[in-house]
Image (cartoon, rainbow, N blue to C red; front, top):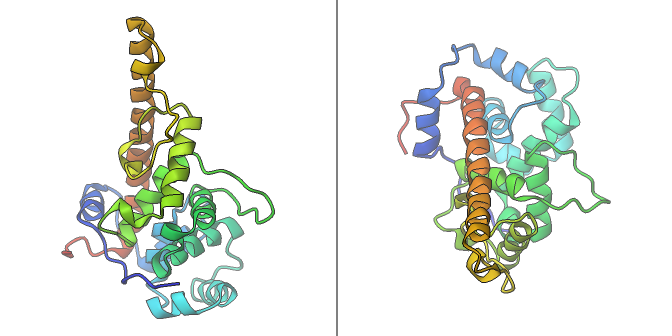
Length: 235
């Protein structure tokens, strides 16, 4: 597995942090709270963990060592499995190409970053909302220049999932998706103008739902990351 370059904050992430109106608190207090917060995001957990462990350590240490180190350094009796799972998901995304190359790993990571417990023995499909959030969150710390970096298999999976959930077109975060050849567009589905208009409106509504979900999640993520980020930094 090839390693990706060390993560850096994108301009979009820094701008979101500037807009955050959360009062600053000490990094140790913030990290302690974050690693006990059921709503902590993977990217925030990763940035907080970097305050205590070097990037090379996060990428090289086994998960149990990382967990024990953080519990000791943050004076936490035990980090919840789901919270720790989100941190490990971001470590995998930053340190390997699995999120972009292996469709099964992609699905699992999408699920974990969306707050679901890992289920090794059960296949849990990632829906368009989970995929959209995972792609956006991963891009904050492991940005790639093009969606073409995703394997053809993953891009095809994205398209199938979008079709199954009633999308006629890919929302912006999943613009790299390859829609199925048998996808029927509203224009091909009917020549009834009213039905066609309703289908187009439904597709736009789904796009808007994803946009709103991302807006809310990014605002929360910005608040969680703010204690650990120098918002004056430049890319």
